[in-house]
Amino acid sequence: MPINSFLYPGAKFIPTYEVANSCRFNHGDSPQLHKTPSGDGNKDAWTFSCWVKRSLITDQTGNYQGIYGIYVDGSNQESLHFVSNDKLEWQLYQSGSIVGQLTTNRLFRDIGAWYNIICSYNSAASASLRMRIWVNGVEETSFATDTNPSSGLDSFMNSTNKLQIGMINTTNYAAQYMSEIVCLDGTAVTDATNFGEFDEDSPTIWKPKDVSGLTFGTNGFYLDFEDS
Image 1 (tube, rainbow, N blue to C red):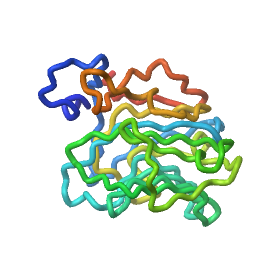
Image 2 (image 1 turned 135 degrees about the horizontal axis):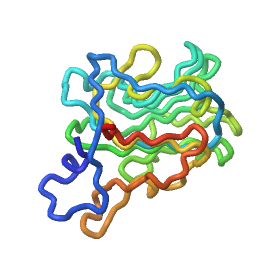
Image 3 (image 1 turned 90 degrees about the vertical axis):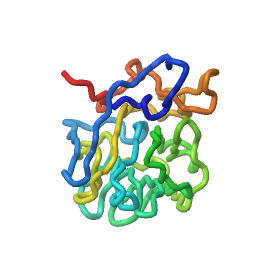
Image 4 (image 1 turned 135 degrees about the vertical axis):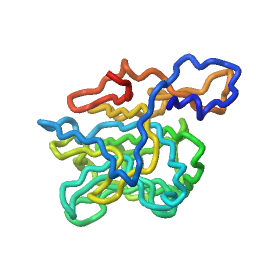
């Protein structure tokens, strides 16, 4: 399903870039995509971006829903997900402790909207800039939990551990549509404009951009969900 059919119903202007495909993750079917890199990439500087539309299955709204997850074992994992109260949470859990976490105060309950969610990780940055989240072009700054990782802390992203899309840990699956999933290995973006834009025709609506020219690095990837 094209992103633009949700973002711009009845639009009078044709966007400069249109997304034609998405992937449906149906919670009841235990969906996931996964990749296990053969070698380490850059675990200290990277960016993950995706477009997400929460499911119309109302009995799933309010449950944990995974966007991406890296599960090593019960004491070591990393994930981006919607928590049970519909907040967005990005968490790094290592050696049995939370070492980095952003949990928004904002709630994400609009099951008719697409959200472009961007996570930028840079362990060499100053403390408050090591984990950053943007939603639809605007950086999130109000958090219920804001725990900064220590300087130089390796994440699990771009490691040789399995990366799962649409699932976290071993049980929490997605109930949502996802599109334009991007991972940049070695690049921690400092703004959202690599992935979207506001334009003069609709200055308050965040629109997708062509991401095919970005630098993906060793373990980076771009999922456009086109058929072969």
